[in-house]
Length: 299
Image (cartoon, rainbow, N blue to C red; front, side, top):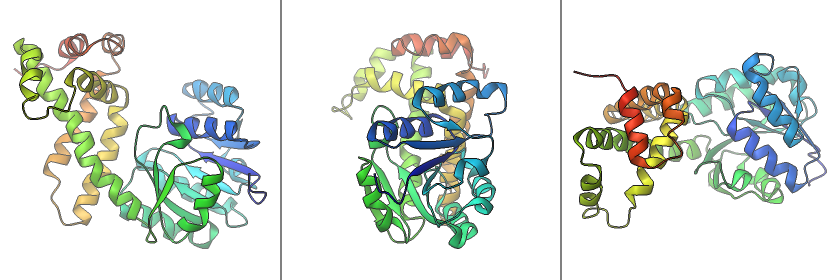
């Protein structure tokens, strides 16, 4: 562990923050602090319990979390990324690295970098796969003027990070454009197979798709994509709105992307129903049956 970075900090301690922190603890990081706006609330109980299990100190405020930290991870909701940077800027010292792993547009990352200025060495980070099971070893892209400097630090923490470019937003652009396809396919999976379920032709539709995509196992893809949407649909909808902003920044009208926003958000709400939650670890037909029963009737 580099001696110049004795303390790590997280702003936002949801799934991603917890996964990375647990990996860092196993890699030998002795001191990790975290702040999440849910900590003082009843719904923050599970976050505080997770921190205790991992060995992370729950700070009483953002200022306390980042005080003395040499490396800070911003892992908040997409809509809160700039606000999170604003909350910590007055309390930074020694120009710590700030890894922005939030799924936001390149423009949003550039805005955050400008806001922080010389207060931190800002790094645009894109997480390229689900954070579990690899946790801190999940492939990531780094971008910005400080990406090269932080890369050896992350390598010492056994992380799999590569450089996307020296310009802030380069990593975000890859992540956001990629998400158009990844989360769009999830939304199409729901729409296609929900209709197949109601028509009683799930197996037939899956079999016919083998003709076009012989390398894909739809028996695994369908439940996986549905579980991701049911568990994280509202968050993924917010991320897709950032993808839409990215496309607009590039002069591309996000017609399909905005439809994906709607499907992801609706599925996130459906996924909160206990009948759906209880079906998510079962096969695709059972999950689809639960979703079909819970989904709004469009007739």
